[in-house]
Image (cartoon, rainbow, N blue to C red; front, side):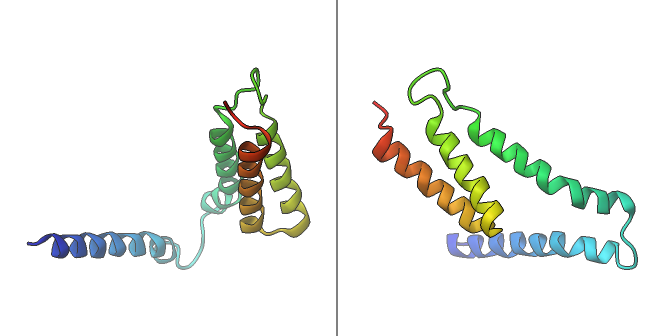
Length: 110
């Protein structure tokens, strides 16, 4: 099998499994969702977001210049935008842009 055919088969298999995994909960819990699954649906999204925030900020140097100030400003911008607009994509993109502008133009690392 040539490289293009091999790649096409890999994409097809990965797509099929992704679709299957997306539809599996609807097939399994067709009639009634168990309470523990509903509970996980409520608590996992905030827990995952918290873990992502910790992962992103884990290597912030607070004892040396710039003392985590760009990260703090970007996080505050994301939180305030999310509270104000309730648009996750807008909040994340604006926070990323603010952070990049701060580290490239204001707090230049040397």
